[in-house]
Amino acid sequence: MEISFHNANIFVVAVYASTSYLTRRELWTDLTYVIDSHPGPWLSLGDFNAILGAHEKRGRRPPPILSCIDFLHWTSKLQISIGCGSFFMFFCLFMRVLA
Image 1: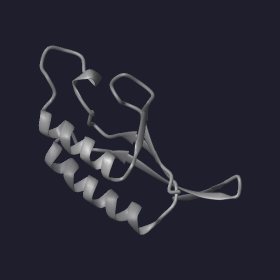
Image 2 (image 1 turned 90 degrees about the vertical axis):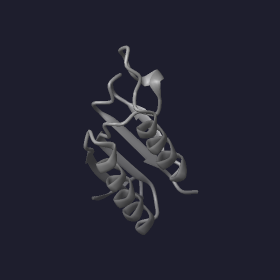
Image 3 (image 1 turned 180 degrees about the vertical axis):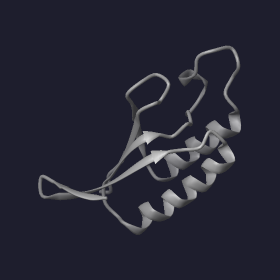
Image 4 (image 1 turned 120 degrees about the horizontal axis):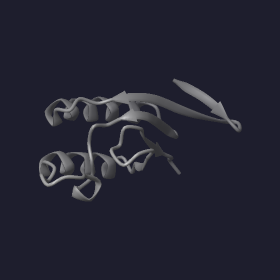
């Protein structure tokens, strides 16, 4: 969806990612294609079901390192900033603004 805000267009996408990191890889590929096809600022709301590292997780079991690396590489590649509404990333967003 595209919205106008203060004379600028912003693309908005809702995300509810799979708990399987293999399936999430497909989402990262699809989102990369869509974002690259529509240059400009992006806002995403939803649940990525992914974390950047162990510092974002509670409990004894560490998160799967490959899953964290995939998400970190994807966010870095697209220069995405991530902010969360809750500790467990139930409600997350990303914003990408192109200079």
